[in-house]
Image (cartoon, rainbow, N blue to C red; front, side, top):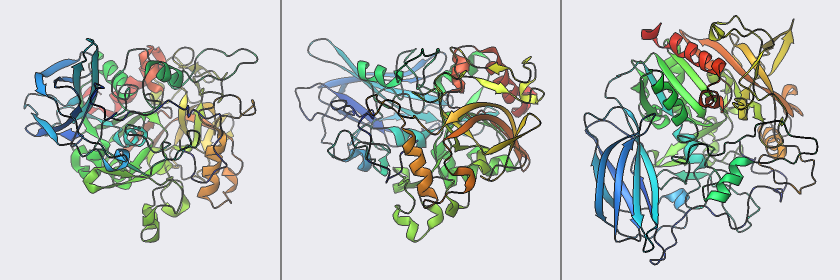
Length: 539
């Protein structure tokens, strides 16, 4: 969730610590460093991956591995000649402009998957330095019945390599969180987004805080102590898709891989699949990506969304090399010529396309749970309201039961919901925010707009509620509809709805995958139910 461009002055308790700098080259030949990036995010067998490398070492090594439950190395190169290159000060927006160091042919036998490129050097003290990038290998034609869609647009928004991202980094005041509206794909990816140790802290806390507790943000503290990006736990592979893939592979599910960018440029890439799978945090979408998902579901596909925080419309420029998101309504220059493509929240009335129309739920209907001081003593799980639905078959869950709490804490960090009401003990969408009439709310948990400050600015907060309240006020020019007026509270929701000939399951929480990591039997069974229903060959 980002702050609106014109909220009150940034709080001085925000997690902008002087000295906690994003990665960027030192431009000092005496300092041994290495980074790399690729010219694209995805490739077909037979194509070549262009790798751009900057290093102050004379030589470096490189390996490529297909990551998953059992990582497999497919290429290893040693003794590659190193070269250092200048890097623009605004590389976060303009890209690095480093020359191509080498190309990697994608083998015809390489299966579809997520591939890590790991480059490494050894300094004069014998210390090892490594950094990584990625690329996706697609299937020329569907080799599986389900396609995992990597959340590459959200990764671009959170990647702060080079100094800034869609949340902070510009300006001279370390406490003033000024975002860049342009994020380049032609640069390295911040440390921890692609690879980090097992058990690294996530964006939530577990356990029951005692009386007088002061909120903690374990993901930030872990990153600061271990030299990782502040945003390591916010997006993409290491935190979200990788744990899901490891679980799916261990349970015999076959997946092909695509990226959100593939949907943008080649919407037909979903043709032939029964099921599209999204995991974790997919906050940012272009209208073209969204069109592709809508068309897939309308034609009879099943969308299994084990994630949350559907919120921002973005735009791609420079053949996909640059992502644009201004966020504040009307700030995007395109607003003057094509206001429906203004890069702001999907729920802005002028876009005419509320987020819930695609995903059933929306980022502004829930927002935060078990993150800092947001619902800190809630169960961390979902309360069941429709136990007889097919998604809960075989779970032995009853009305009012809670699942996914305790150490799993699946309802945490950023969550989705809709405006709702209760009738005879059951929740129903009101439809005022564009929620589809066929939406069934299966389970719920309390959520709030952000962290309320009870400490008079003396305690660091990761998501002050004023950010989201300021965003909502801006979306409606200070006069939001009644259902959004002074709406500090919402709910995370697990829901299912039909669209055209297809069906969408929405877990409504970015931390659903934590239930798979912790082997929560209810989360695992619901995940299997959804995949089995949507993947025709397993019915």
